[in-house]
Amino acid sequence: MSKRRPLVKGLEAIVGKERVVHHPEDLLVYEYDGSIDRAMPQAVVLPDSTGEVSRVLALAYREGVAVVGRGSGTGLSGGAVASEGGLQVALTRMNRILEVDVENRLAVVEPGVINLRLDQRARRSGLRYAPDPSSQKACTLGGNVAENAGGPHCLAYGVTSNHVLGMEVVLEDGAVTWLGGMERDSHGYDLRGLFVGSEGTFGLATKIVTRLLPTPPAAKTYLAAFSDMRSACDAVSAVIAGGMVPAALEMVDALTIRAVQKVAHAGLPEEAGAALLVELEGEAEELEETGLEVEAILTGAGAFNLRWAESEEERERLWSARKGALGALGALAPNYYLVDGVVPRTRLTEALERVSEIGHRYDLPIANVFHAGDGNLHPCVLFDERKPGAVERVMEAGGDILKVCVELGGALSGEHGIGLEKKAYMPLVFTGEDMEMMKTVRGAFAPLGRLNPGKGFPGGPAGHHNLQRGAVMAAGPGAYV
Image 1 (cartoon, rainbow, N blue to C red):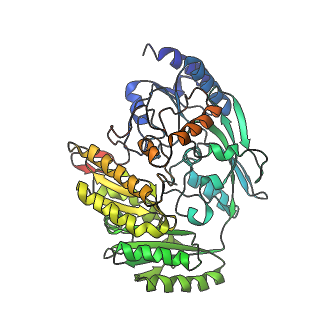
Image 2: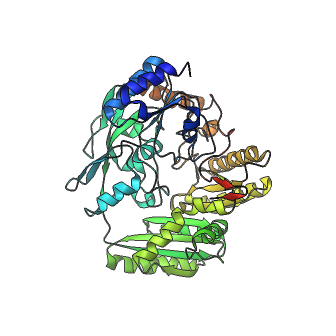
């Protein structure tokens, strides 16, 4: 406590004792996110205004303390893990929707606002917030900005960076500035674009201006079963080749279907080797015509048990099954490691075959649930951390999957970020000169590198060597929820 005392006292002077966490037993809940990495922060502070965030960062700057921002802790790359200790700034109290401007189709929110809450508020005015991560019910807009989060409907509408117009941010030394603004176009360098996806290494966003889209007049959601993954992948390419861009085009494999049905009985086809969820949006008359084309394409690719949601309740049930798939995997194994890689859509079949080979080679079951329309894979490697050597084997398998993605012309991350999980693999994609240039850009925002240090680039404390805590939790001997 001796080293922490000046920091803790300073934090308490800013926000009060009740909003500073520093006892080791209380810090346990802040040592992990949705990844398999874990590290204990020195202290956690919960500010509730930009002024408090500014004063907190200024204090940390003077004290030479590293700072890690945190939202709901749903991230999947170790972004909210304090890998080098230091101070964790939890922004969950800053959860106000400050404005919904219907005329200009924008909203101003604080970083702790839950993604789904903004969408629900916008829909009351006939608008929507399009990016919808699977953790939409829990993840915060600040975390979405940090990781440039995506989601099923980003196939048609784009990821977070396409929907953020501007941000108020607090920099490393506590200075407050705006990047971008209220307008859809801004002059000069796109500093807003640089900040989105910077994984908390540039600063902490304290206000976010998002654009809102009109709610589509109608939607039609199809569920199509296929005998195997190859047929389902062929169907994905055929739909896009047919000149259509569905609002969403999602795939789950047989293992995932089994897990979801075991937990939720959501009506997924248990006899299928894979299933596609295809959602179309537009005018009702247009959907009738487009729907017939999609049905013909899916049937021609081998779909059976093809049906569409005939009510909003059925549609919501299908989407609940898709977005709850990761949680359902707890019915099959106590732990999972989720790999977030991208491949060209035309190489989905090859990528999934090689992922299956990796699973067999390491004797690890791998469930696949992913954004098929844009080639964003989410292989979930299932394991039991209590078995000696299991974590190391899982990490090796995950690394091999990322190598396959790169070999096939893809990328290391589609929406979860690099963080701790993938930083060792950056040289697969970027040269040393590339990474030095990125560090130079980071240095323009945070010259001392004290914001979320050890993330995004090789070196520093390694990830992957801590055990998973949080995504699936032990409820007793042999029982998991």
